[in-house]
Image (cartoon, rainbow, N blue to C red; front, side):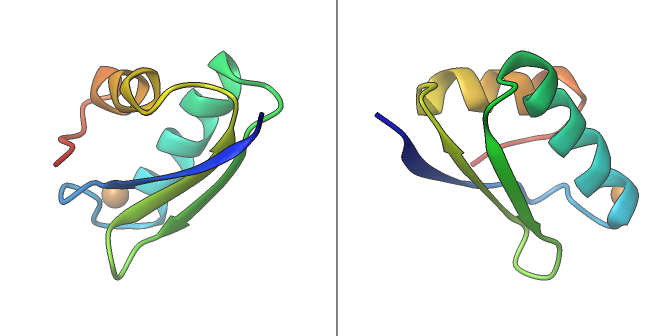
Length: 66
Ligand SMILES: [Cu+2]
């Protein structure tokens, strides 16, 4: 089942951060839909993956999650 996971990522500062996070998630979860709100610093992911694995992918590209 696809669920929407929202992760607060305070270290997001710009479009490049959004791109690298989006690409990293899509590399691991090719059918995920990723949306990054740079102002709110929130990553929304529609995916079958768990919140924990999405958080691990984000931290693996150098970002901090709350
Ligand atoms: Cu950036």
